[in-house]
Length: 102
Image (cartoon, rainbow, N blue to C red; front, side, top):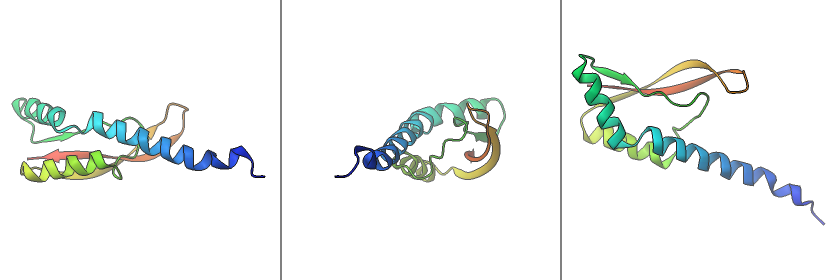
């Protein structure tokens, strides 16, 4: 008989992906980004870094794909820039965030 703990890894992987999807939906929503880039443009900027929660990877999410499709359709450019962040538990980890330019 298999241990009930054997199912933990797939459950954690699904939960992680679900969490990443939620973060991407919140932070990369086209309506939100449209507002942010417009505010940045009014201040004279020509690019905007979209701040993501420390250590969360969102590039492999459906919400990120929707974001990238919207960016392209609007004629904007996006570059993923690396930085090091401090996670909630104090670790220093690499991460990437989108920088939108126009």
